Image (cartoon, helix red, strand yellow):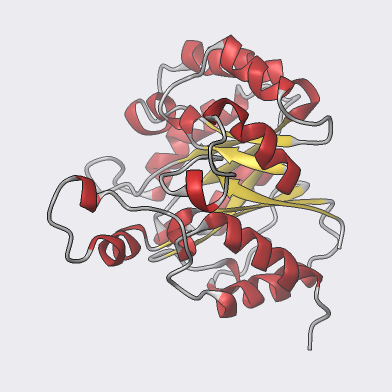
Amino acid sequence: MAEIRIGTSAFTAAGWENAFYPAGMKPADYLTYYATKFNTVEVDSTFYRTPSAAVVSGWARKTPDDFVFALKTPQVITHERVCLDCDEEFAEFVKVADLLGEKLGPILLQFGYFNKSAFKSLDEFLARLKPFLKKLPRDHSYALEIRNKNWFEPRFFDLLREHRVAWAWIDQSWVPRPWELKVKAELLTSDFAYVRLLGDRKGIEQQLTAGAKGKEEKTPLWEKVIVDRTAEMKSWAKYLRARALIPKTFIFANNHYQGYAPETVELFEKILHDPPK
C-alpha cells in the first residue's frame, strides 16, 4: 500500500484531557503531544470560522516537519452560502491555511444533506458547484463530501474528476460506503483518497447521555470505545488494499464512530497493517 495517513477529526474533545492526554498537561501542549502519536489531523474548528494567522502559525510551529493538516472549509461557504458569492471568504481562508506551508494537506468541502427546498435535484446542485470548482486554486488539494445518497451518479463523479477533487468516502449512518454503491462509475476522482469514519452521531450521543438529568451530565465524554466497529474497519481495509496503487490515502476517525477516536485510529492502523487472513 502506498502512503497512508490516519488521524482523528480534531485533536481535542471532552474527555480526552484524561483519556488521551497526560494528566495535568496544558491545552497549549495538546497538539505537540498529539503529533507524537499520529502524523495527521483533520481540523474541525475551521468549519466554524477561519482561524487567525497566529493560531495557524502556532499549529505549524508545534508539529514536526512531516505532519499534515486537513482543514474543513468554513460553514459560511459550504452551508450558509453553499458556494455562492463567497469568493472573498474562501480566498481569506486559503490565505490563512497557506501559513501551514508544506504541512497543509487536503481542504475538505463538507456539505450536509440538502432537502428539496435547498436543491430540487442533483443537476441544480451541480450547476451551483461547477463554477465554484472552476475557481479553486490549482496548487491545493481538495476533497468533497455530500450526504444525499441519491446523488451518487456518474455526472457527479465526472465533475469532481474534471477538477481533480477527491470524493470523500464516508462511513456514516445513512450514507452507503463506496463498495455498497450500485452505480457503475470510477469512484476515485483525484490522485488521493479521503476516508472519514463518522458513525451515528445521534445514536452514540443518546447512549452516552442515557439517564442523564442535569445539563452537565448530558455533555458526552469521549473517553472510551462503546461501539465495536471492527468488522466495518476490516471491510475498509479490504477495500483499500484492493486499491493499493492510490498514491496517498488520508483516513480520519470521529469520536462518533466508536466513542473514542484515538483508539479507533490505533485499531484501524493495526487492521491495515496486519496481513489479511
